[in-house]
Amino acid sequence: MNFSTNAHSGSHISKENIPHPVQVQRGKQRIVLGVLSENDYHGRSYSQGSQFSKHSSISDSSHLAFLGRPSSSSFDIYVEEACEVVLAPSGQEVVSESYNVVAETTADLRFLTELSSGHDASMQSEQDESLMSKEVLCVSEYAEDIHLHLREREIKSRPKPGYLEKHPEITNGMRVILVDWLVEVVQEYRLRSETLHLAVNYLDRFLSYTALVKRGKLQLVGTAALMIAAKYEEICPPELNEFVYTTDSTYTKKQLVRMEHVFLKVLSFRMAAPTINQFLRLFMSVHPVCTITENLAQYVAELSLLEMDPFLQYTPSLVAAGAYCLAAYIVNKSLWPDSLNAFTGYTTVEIVPCMTALHKLYISAESRPQQAIREKYKTSKYFRVSLITAPAALPFHE
Image 1: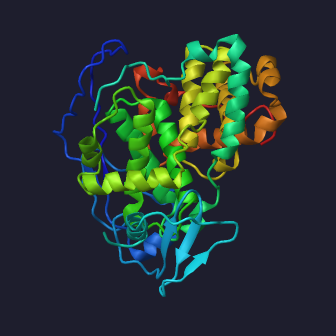
Image 2 (image 1 turned 90 degrees about the vertical axis):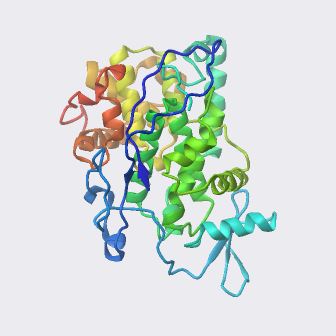
């Protein structure tokens, strides 16, 4: 798996004057993660990982990686539209409870079988804002309808918190590294924060509806998730060859296109998923905050993408409320305003558990091996909010 932390500068781009895609400079060597030994693979968590330097190749067995290793599993899988079938070695279909299956093409079946086997840029505006802009969200006559629609949709587009149980070769630590890498790619190609949030949602939903994906295929899944999210959200998404390049050509164009095809089928082409970022911007349009608080809330929201537990147990709207409250408390010792209480129906008591988890994550961010989000928010563009020290305790019992 390959990482890049190169940043690229570019001129401000407006929607009215969109230039041709700009190819990314490729002068620096991309980072390669080594292969995890079998013992380390079963025992290591993300918190025991090592810091990866920006210009080094790591090939020892002490680091997490998703490069292909022989599979001990004798099962292959086929998934279609959130339904799961595990194929036994004899070829007999074993259907999980509460699942129904409609087979598609032989090519799709073959590709998903390969996925569970060991085989085988444009510059964007400096304004990192979702296409669902504040100008749209703050229109009073639509705000409540938008909020109700997002709250309904977030339930239908949630991943399953315990989905890694169906993927014995993938650990939580591997997912943390993959999300950290996606953050670096988003930064490198100057993509929007909403693109990152969508990509992580797609990744988690795909893995929720599949089984037995091999560690050597995890980066392919993540890259496809980001490519689809960029096509959905960006004005000028990076070209296919740029996504191949981000993996240091670990995967071919053909593999990535096939992965995209299956990915969309598994998610039933339901790509309009409400994200933490969307809810956060909606909340800040209803009750505006200062620029420092706004960027700090966005930083906290992105940190939550790293952790499945406990944040997949909360809805995106509740995580957004927790990020809003934590940022407001850190900056000016306020919490959940009455206006948002009335608008969302959430009370401070309901938000406290998620806010407490976010506070612990915020405090531990500096000592974690994956630093892409923290480095991003150290820049002047985000007012260096990741350098703000959080209070040791919140104003209620943790």
